[in-house]
Image (tube, rainbow, N blue to C red; front, side, top):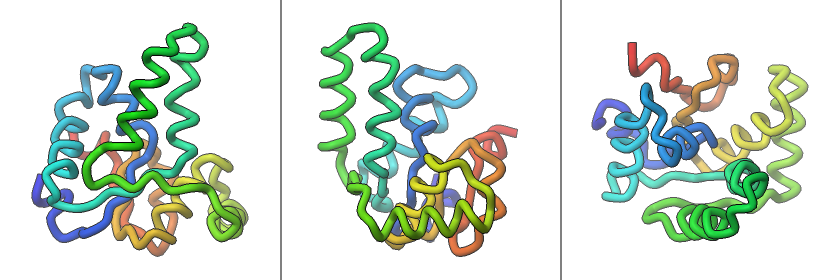
Length: 146
């Protein structure tokens, strides 16, 4: 894990890291657990867009699982060494520029913009399209499992 996070003081985490971890995805649960354990232990700090919170809550809300909604919100709000970043105008302006330049989908552009503006030097995702983005090192979970 030190090669993934070691030289990066601030990393951004895409929603998929949390989903794969929380749902115990068979291909990625060990890797996401390692990432979140390293963040929790202070090997680096992580930034997460509030948009991730919204994305995480959709399925539990569909299932009418308010207990899970509360659990996920508490997890993201209180996870050690993680900053849950509000969506501000500055982020939206950067997201618009990223969307225009790289053709990212709006939610993706918001998450990437959040990472860049919060000083992350690496972002962890499962979306290979993000590798086109300049200004932040993009690592795909799938590449780490090959």
